[in-house]
Length: 169
Length: 241
Picture 1 (cartoon, helix red, strand yellow):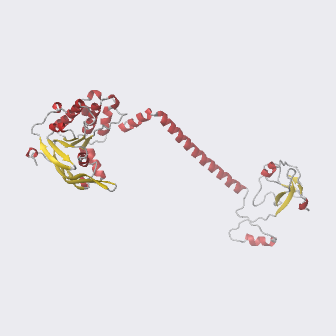
Picture 2 (cartoon, rainbow over the protein chains, first blue to last red):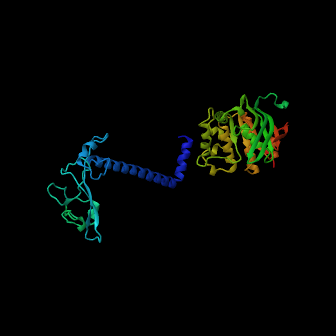
Picture 3 (cartoon, each protein chain N blue to C red):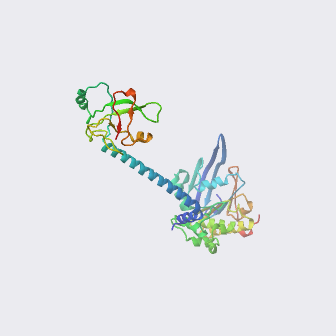
């Protein structure tokens, strides 16, 4: 063993407490770094997988009073591969524990459960079924905040008038 | 030059060496045009008070420092024209240093301290032999903390000579030692000079030490103020101060 190496070994043995502490700090740092990178990679993979499997749209565009006849023109725009139309409508809901009506945004879904874009992930209950009007699917956070469960009913505010919104599925 | 040295080859030649330290706006003239020659195998004492420039001169001869102006030659090598790599090679192959404070590595034994040098030197003597030259063969396995100041300085001398240097430069080697221990150290240095023929330059402010030298170069205020040749050297054991 070279003498400088022997000096190093003896010096490290003489201050083994500090050496162990430094090794521990470095190991903890490296471990935290590796764990963070793994978590980051995992989250990235999960996000990409979710977006891919549920066909999350790249672009959202809102229009008013746009006729369906515009659909072919939108599809023909360079770079557009898939287009799906949704109806978006804000309504007022009478939520039991809220003193004022809540504003809810209703978004239509295609009749086919296998929509081409922005598919829904159903964590509880079931997907909407054709020919069963008045059913809604609500976001998980909204349902948990107001303790809604499958089969619950929510009355539209009188201001919502003609809306027939009743049953959570 | 003195005729006493006419049969010896010149090992160092310094011409008009000047060294100026810039301390802010103040210039400190450590050396003011020093010219000198050192000869192979001689024992030279550089004598001067603190601040006379003797350590600066030794550092320049040893390749540890470079002058502001002037030329220094080691044999045919112009040190003042050498780059850092060449100076490192010069120090490693040709020069042994002994300092006032021994600079031993506390976690290595005396022998291991010497072996630090023999591991990188091109033509070293065995570490044990170097220690025996300074009468410390029996203490080879002791750590510096287990040795007295004089013994530590002798280990430093053994470390300096283990690579068989042509030149041994000693900067106040007895400065931190009492008289008795200092004499032991000086005897070791004189023995190295005598046995190995190593050109030896010892810096000191102690005029008594000058009596054991072949030649004494006196410095004052950055200049050489006198050079004397001792016709009869006094053994270190007979020195008193």
